[in-house]
Amino acid sequence: MEDVIGAGTAAGIRVCPGTECGVSRRAFVGATLAAAAAALLAGCGDGQIGPAENPFGPDSPGAGTVIRVADYPALAQVGGIVRVDTPGGSVAVVHAAQGTYAVLSMRCPHQGTRVNISGNAFVCPNHNARFNAAGQWTGGQRTGSLVPVPFTYSAAAGTITLGAGAG
Image 1 (tube, helix red, strand yellow):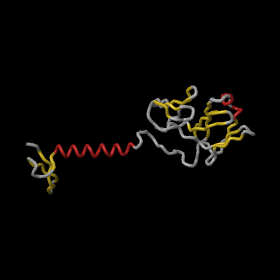
Image 2 (image 1 turned 45 degrees about the vertical axis):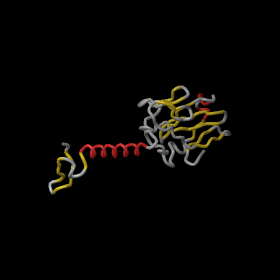
Image 3 (image 1 turned 60 degrees about the vertical axis):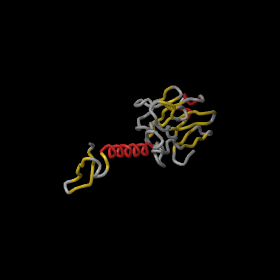
Image 4 (image 1 turned 180 degrees about the horizontal axis):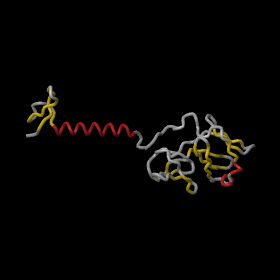
C-alpha cells in the first residue's frame, strides 16, 4: 500500500494509507519535479549564459576617449585588431574594411572576464568562449556576442572617439 500526502492538521501534514486523503506521494513528487523543470526552462530563455542586452547601458567604456589610429601599427591593415585600455575598461578596435572600424567591449558577456585577442578573433580565458573579429560568438562556452561600443571615426583626423550615441 502506498503512502499518500493528505490534508493538513494542527501539527502539519498527515500521511494516510491508500489514496483516501488526496494525492499520492509519487504523483506529488512527479508534479513538483515537473514544476521545477518548467521554471528552470523558462528561466533559461534563449539558452545563452549572461545578459543579452548591453551591460554598459548608455555609458560606454571610455566614453570620450580619443584613439589615434596611427598609434597602432596593427590597424594599418584590414583585419588588424588592437586592445585599448580606457578608464571604463578595455576595448578592441578592429580594422574591419578599408576606412571602416569596429569597437567592441573586451568583457566576456558570460562572466565579465576580459577576453584575449587570438589571431584575428577573441577567446575568453575562463571558459574558452570564442568570438570572431566582428565579436560574434563562434564556439566554446555558450554565451552572447561581444558588445559593440559606440564611436565616431574621423578619417580626416585619423581618430576614433568613443562615446554614447556615436556610430
